[in-house]
Length: 106
Image 1: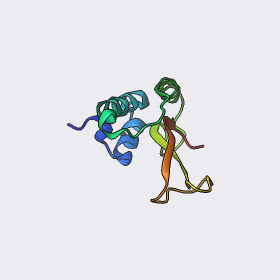
Image 2: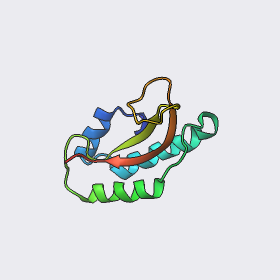
Image 3: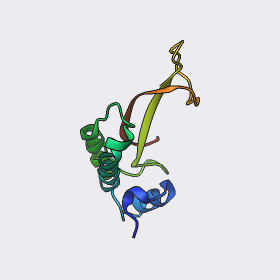
Image 4: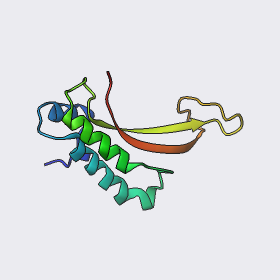
């Protein structure tokens, strides 16, 4: 059986919609995986797991708001090193302050 962090977004969304998996369970699984691998990957500049867990709990208590309701979202901000303009993930940029938050779309 797959661990929650191993589910595809489609699989996780279906399980959340069917009340077979909570947003908090999925998020906690993702956090455990991040913490397990962070020392070797050093992929995260900053996280706010406490706020993410609070939001996941809120989403678990609320009515479903769409296909991506309750799925964790990792956000990264990319900057062009010389001009510091925000851009969409070109391969030559460096990563600044990613965060993890469950997402919901209205």
